[in-house]
Amino acid sequence: MTKRKNPEVGRPRVVQTVELLRARCNEVGECLEWTGYMTNNVPQVTHMGHMVPVRRLMLELSGRPVRDGAFVGCDCGNKSCVNPEHAVIRTPTQHLQKMANIGAYNEAARLAKLMMHARKRSKLTVDAVRDIRLSSNSSNEVAKQYGVSRQTISRIRSGDAWKETSSPFAGLGAR
Image (spheres, rainbow, N blue to C red):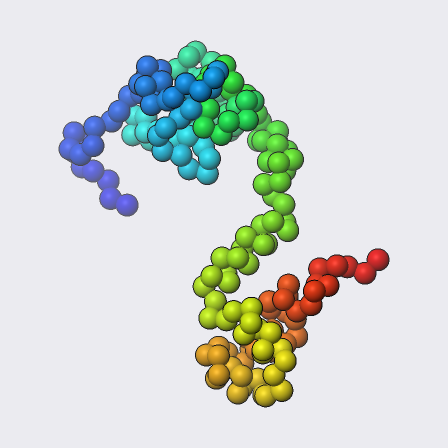
């Protein structure tokens, strides 16, 4: 990253005000829905040369200080809402607890999402994996046929790869 030698050159540093922020919102019931940039469902804006969360900035500009490290959410359930009256200040522990309660750290859902993206990049399809498992040819022959490595074929056949296609009962643990 290069630093600008002359801070006067380039993009001007915007100093946000409550009025400027409200101008970028739509009133929906009691909520002020942010229409600007969002990342990970968090409304963001550039203020004095830095990207900052809009909810935090709205609170600070309204005279409610927010401690460093605190998270500012909203209690109305609207992810786009930046209304300071709906703002809730949480400690990092409270924030992690809230995220866990809504399933943001659900291991099964996380793995399913990762697998979905991996499958989109894969050379193989579900039908190809089924054929690989049923094939009596050597791993080297099958690997050449599908354009993958021998290790990939071995992992599919042993059930270490493409696990959920191995059996209709995969994932049902014995009790």
